[in-house]
Length: 257
Image (cartoon, rainbow, N blue to C red):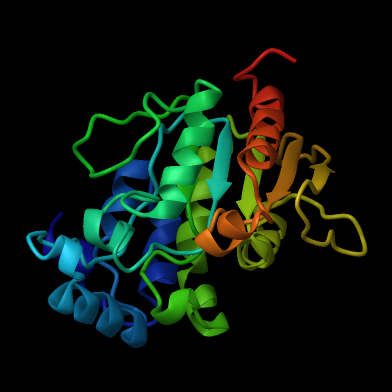
């Protein structure tokens, strides 16, 4: 990428200025990795990479924003929260290198949507079928809690990603309440109409957004986030996650009904 593409990457308007102009996911992903718009997140991702975790002391951490992962013709998008400090922030790939990703990829693999049930590093050969993984915040946040301002600054990347996927997109699976609140305004801005009152998040939530002059019908599905807190306590079990992903894959034309 030339210098013109990344000029002003530390400005708060960098995502808003560049994301809408992207003509493809490759261009979008490259710009995402250059973003430095949120000072707190930049400091945290780099501090974590310098300190490292003992188990990963031999790793050269990615320590940049983590772009989405999956094919450009995906019919299903899975939206999480943000990369983990020692997961995606270390490996450079969404949902890769931590327990959350371990849980998610087992579920995807069981449905034939991932080529393998493990996601260890960016060069492990993993591929996805018909599914694109992304998040509303692309940098690892302290305590896994982005601020509303950081979410809003990062929003143009998600909006552009869903826009580029929109010709074939049939379903969006949102993992957790934070992602749900981040996705709803993006869908409205993109031209879909939400029911009123706005749909509340919950595991198993399934809202059908009708086709409009600009957009085809879209299914919005909710699942508890596969965090260790949820999976260890049984709030989210593997069958629960698989059921939601199966429903999305079915409406996305990736599985027979």
